[in-house]
Image 1 (tube, rainbow, N blue to C red):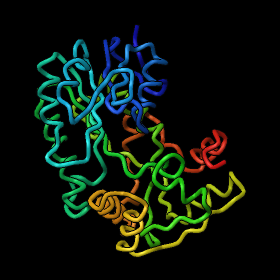
Image 2 (image 1 turned 45 degrees about the vertical axis):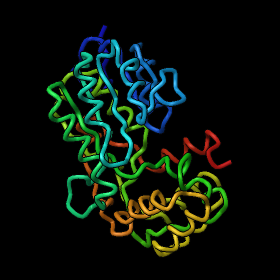
Image 3 (image 1 turned 180 degrees about the vertical axis):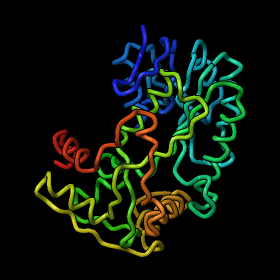
Length: 291
């Protein structure tokens, strides 16, 4: 049996067992669902998943890896990264294919601070030098941050305060990220590829809230704030100081519109354009995201 994307002509035989790290997360659970729809033997690995896995506990790595042929790698955003040690363990265990979730701009000087970019660069270097087939995904900011992530509470409360000014980003649907990951895990033709993933148009946060309002009938207000005020607000809500600083720094590329340029990764990987934010918003509203 073969597994293909309907828009592609290349295919490969069934990939054996696929281990999906972060199997309950935004992209991971979508990757798991798509693989299982294709009939691929899939392990959803996380601290709360079907397959126990904890980045901070290397004793959980080997049981998750035993018998796995391919791995979707979602590493922690901390440096030094544990991903290189995991990749070494995975190759020794017989894994033949690695698909890494990285981040947009990690190779561009000044796009992120070292605190944000270093873990991704360390992870990318590890898979590139692994000696097995690898693919790297570099998505920008997820559309799902507004429906199931850090921005959801503000949207629901009717006011979203962020340090992004009038900057724009080409937000990417996590469904597209998952589709590219599954293609790379199950098809030929993706080894050695780095896919830069964006949506089809750049939007400001105010634009995003307009799109959400079109499908919900209720518009949340966008309130631009200074980075220091945003960081302080996160700490006041209970977020650790270091994590609050990283989150605030990660939004600086939106403020400067460094996240705005459109990329062709989805089309190159899947042979189709990425989903528009309006399509994402319609589906998220139908699923009750903002109810």
